[in-house]
Image 1 (tube, rainbow, N blue to C red):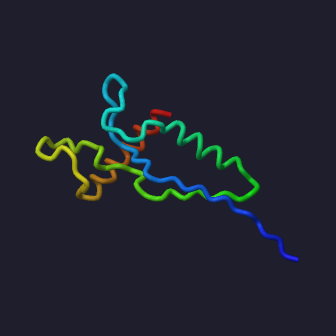
Image 2: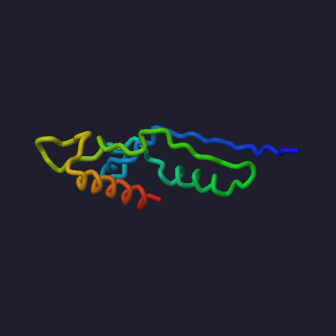
Image 3: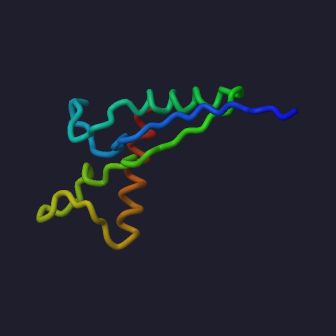
Length: 101
């Protein structure tokens, strides 16, 4: 006799983490303004033991286009070269998102 385990799959997409809020705390150039709710949702999935749970993050998690380049000639860019520039942008996004939790 075989047993079948059920798996629940949660799919989220288009989070678009990135961009700074305005100085007054308004949305600014951000699409995602609910990082703490996102973190709470992910934490809630880790508490589920039966059925098994899978989380699929289906693209557009980070929005590099929402990040200013620091170059007035090219304020926003979808491409960041060299690789270290892209890594620095990603780290900045992660730190800013984490600080809003």
